[in-house]
Length: 132
Image (cartoon, rainbow, N blue to C red; front, side, top):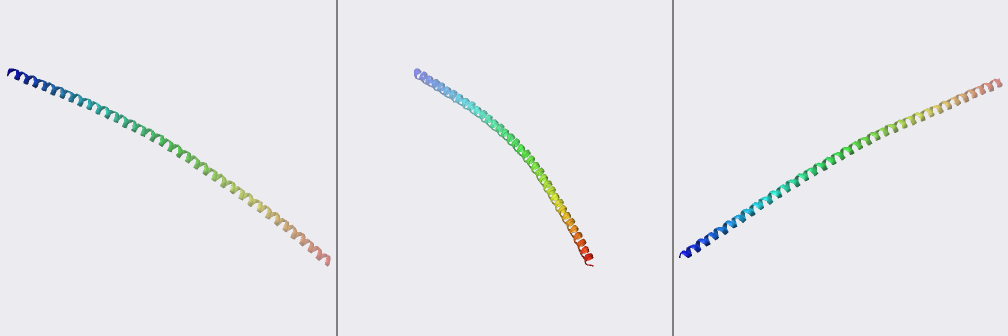
């Protein structure tokens, strides 16, 4: 009976040892899982941070490009306006030159017309004087 009691105590101790060993393994696994989760969370945070930094870098690059394109558009618009103004001035000068040429020709025509009339009047007077 004593032996049975010792056997039971031995079995009870082994059971407790196994249970303790099992609990120790469970705790170890929990700790490893928690460490793995923490590591994954840190990696996730790093990836999010890198993604945000890349996003900011891309936005800055895009904004710089937009600004550059705006400046180029403004420069081209100013250049176009200058060219329009220059063409307007050239056209106005050509119109003025054409007007001057037309007036010069008209004055020349009027002068020749007056000379012709004068000559014709003188001829008529000569003819009249000759007839008298």
